[in-house]
Image 1 (tube, helix red, strand yellow):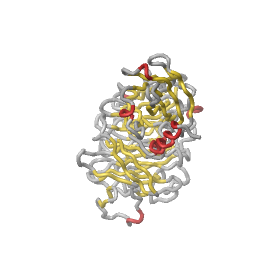
Image 2 (cartoon, helix red, strand yellow; image 1 turned 180 degrees about the vertical axis):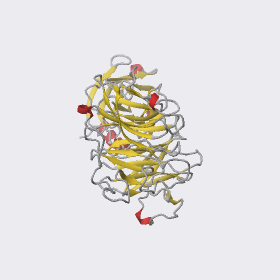
Image 3 (tube, helix red, strand yellow; image 1 turned 135 degrees about the vertical axis):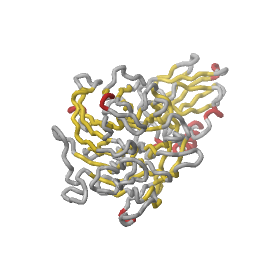
Image 4 (cartoon, one colour; image 1 turned 90 degrees about the horizontal axis):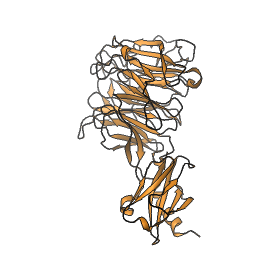
Length: 462
C-alpha cells in the first residue's frame, strides 16, 4: 500500500517531467571575448579567446594560469568578426595529441591549422603548427569559423560568404569558391589532408573537392548531435531572418539557399536553382523587433543527464538579446521557445565530456552553465523558511533554516522516478547530507517537519 508521501510524489513527478525553465548559472569569469568552448574527452574545458589564446578551465571553475595555446601574434583580431574563431580536438587526441584551429591571419585570410600538445598535457606546442588550408577573404566579416568532427571521423569547416552585405560576388552559390560553404576533409594522415571519396563534387569539375554543402551566409557555430550524428548550423541572416539548419551527414551536397533565400523568404533568386533543390531551415526567427534580435549563435542538442526535461532540445542564442532559444521536436516539426533575456552577448555554446551544456558571454567574459531551475511547482511557496545549498551540488548539500530550525525532523532523498534513496535524521543546524555516492542527475528532497508537514525541493547532483 502506498504511503501518503509516495502518493504525493507520484502525483508530483508527472508535472516535473514536462516542465523546464532554462537559466544561466555563472561558472567562471575573467575571460577576454570567449568565442568557443570545447573539451578533449576529459574534465577540462578549453576556452577560445578571440585575440588568439586558448585557456583551460577546470571542473572546479578555476582557470589554469598558463594558457594552453597563445598564438596572438599570428592572429588578426582587428575587426569584430576576425580572430581565433574555432577549435576541434582530433577524435584520437588521447593518442596523437592533435587539435585544429580556425583563425584569421595577419593578411586577413582564414587559416585552418593543426597543432600538437607538448609533453605537458596542459600546454600545446606552439611551434608544431601545420597549416592545412588557407582561404582568401575579400572582406573582414562573415568568416564563419566553427570546426567540428563528425561521427564519420572527418573534419567539418564552416566558412561564411566572404562578407560585405548581400553576398555581392555570389560566393555562397559559386561552387568554384570555398566561401559560404561547409567543407569536409580527412585529416587522419600523418601530414596534410585528403578528400573523402563521398564528398559531392569529387571527380566533378562543377565544384571544388573540399565542399560538402553550400549556400550559407555566415554559419556562426555548428555542432553534431552526439545521439544521431546529425549536423546543426546557426546561420546569421542579412536583415530579415535568422535560421537554423539540421541535416543528416549520410548525405552530402545540400544547398542551404543563400543568397537566393534568407531563411524561408526570397532574397534574390536571379540565376538561382529550383526551389525544390534547396534545403530550407528547420526553423527561423525574425531579425529586429522588441527586444531587438540581430544574430543567431548556433548551439547543441542536449544529450546530458543532469536535466531530463532538456533531453532532445536544441539550444541556441541571439547575440543581441542574449536570449537562450530552444527547439522542441513535435512530430517532425520544431517548436521554438525563447528564454531570457540574459546578459553578456552569448557568442558560443559548448559541451563537457558528460554532454552538459555551457554558454559564453563575449562582452562580459563569463562562462555559464545552462541549468533547469523548474521544479514544476512553486518551491518558494512551499518552503519560504528553507534554503537548500549548494544546488547544484557535488558531494553534499545542507539546509539553512530560517527561524524554524528546531522543526526539521528528517530529510528524505528520492530519485526522480519516486524511489526512496535515503532518510537522514536532522540533529544539528545546517547539517551536511552526503551525496557523493549518487550518480549525476535530478533528485527530490523532502523536508519533513515534526508536525508531520513536508516541503519539497529539487536537487541537481553534478
